[in-house]
Length: 332
Image (cartoon, rainbow, N blue to C red; front, side):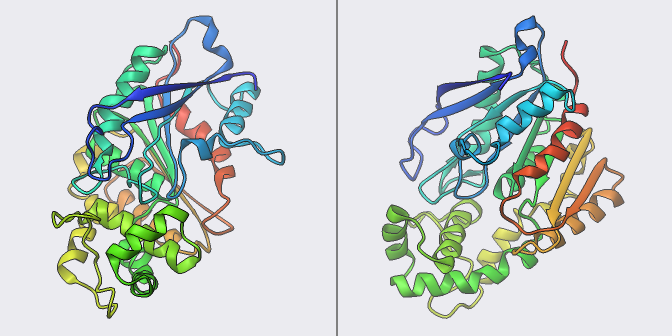
């Protein structure tokens, strides 16, 4: 690469003592563009990983194709994308993902990003320490986290990039609940599943659905009843929907939150949304609905729909990152 990656560590105060006893000292990868040594300050793009992945996954080396950081380096080095600092935080937890939210069931992950990671990067590197020079992007659950960070903390960022981000839960999430209920039932219930499966990871598609539902429940519908600190939106013995818990999930859905978050979204200079046209979770339907709702509000949305499904989509950053960086305040 012409640029370079710095691996550093950050000790979080807000994650200390979290309910799942996950580490509060976290790795942080920071990509510095080739132009970094010319003493200018640069905009920042914070990239959030999908469920079951973390910053190590984004930066993982492969002999066959560039990882996302290498792809960004090629774009910047060729002049196809403006120079920016790329920040890769770690928000992984016991269940495979925090959904990048503050939750009594997992910890204060959105606060960690907005109030600890960004100020830490500003202090350690030559950033432009202003929201107008910051973007947040992500894939899948990372796309959800990007949408919610922009909606909830417009003081932190001015550009959002959501690649097949979780939204329209009635379409994308609800069908997963039956599959998850089967896995919980076969494991002997929620607690038995929570004690057993995370140690070895999910072994089949149903277990993957179940651990995602557990992670989402800990984020969207935390429980004070003790381990695993999550209330399921369905009965794992019958598969029946628990309407009161499901309503708590829907409160976190970015799609119906648009109206309430309108003052925050009006501060964005770009909201980039994409998905594949046969996304296995129906997130292309979610992306279409997000686009229409955002356009009705007169917001600066760009929407792309690609051929393909939900996985193996990091190449889409080649299209989105130049547009995202262009929407930020440039180096100075």
